[in-house]
Length: 386
Image 1 (cartoon, helix red, strand yellow):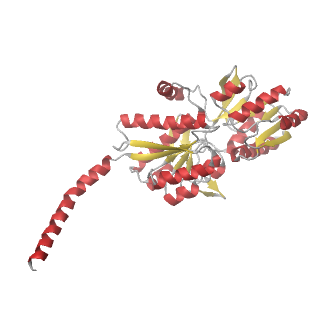
Image 2 (cartoon, one colour):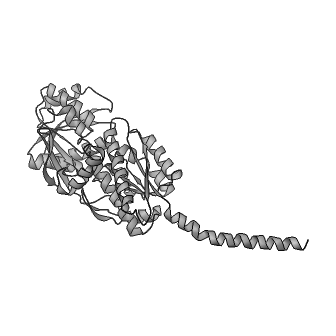
Image 3 (tube, helix red, strand yellow):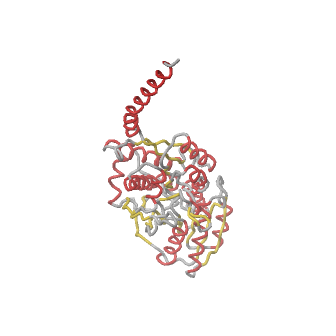
């Protein structure tokens, strides 16, 4: 009887000593573990060309960073999920990335309709997200209150709508404008609201305002009403597929006025689908595609994937830069520490200087680039602020 307790003590001491020696090994293993980051966006559906470019960009940047030694001595891995352009799929993807994959940050999505509903999951799981081209104000702020884990790298709809209206009125000297927009889309509604507000405040007149719903392919009824109103410019704040269809139909109806859009336009696909119909159109964009600052990235992307970079690739590039900068300044991969560092971001990206406002989580003061479609090419006109 007396020998059993003694044996138990010896066993306990051996176990304790074993654990003591194993702890440094475990810590060393943990230090070498791969750090996971997430990406979400459309890999299928109408916006797949953008999502594929975003995901390709992030994968390329992760590979390059790992080849250069990693981040804080750790290798990165990116895990991406297809949202199929659907809000519920975006929510499910974020839930899986945060609870199952244990990512420390998420990049994407590009669409406001997917970026807005993921906020509650991000806050619950305490993981930050950096949206790429999601421009609706509600992505980061609701009722004057900033969402603690939502950030973005792009300027927002009020600014973009005001830029379009200001350029149309002040530079192009248009006084009569029409608007054709997607009534079912947060992005399209936001740009429409602020274009009309700015254009009318400056003294312009909105002679027609017509709506359609996502999925529509025949825009002739709305365009016929717009034609009868005789505008000098038609503002079309929606995405390239519908832009191509409606622009072609507008020209078929004999509408000759200037067309104008936002950052939902730029795509090589648009030029393929509606090259002649959109000739002479103006676009509010996040950057000049021929800016010397972006050429190195363009060339690396082309070399790796043998295709041109879409707009979203540039914003995904800068979102990744924001993440890397935040990790370095935080000195940690803790998601909350990364979030705290993101709030004080001040870096130079390839799309411009990115200074995050702690009260909005938006990059304040980014200038817009005005692009004109000339001979089937996106041609930079000027940087412009309303």
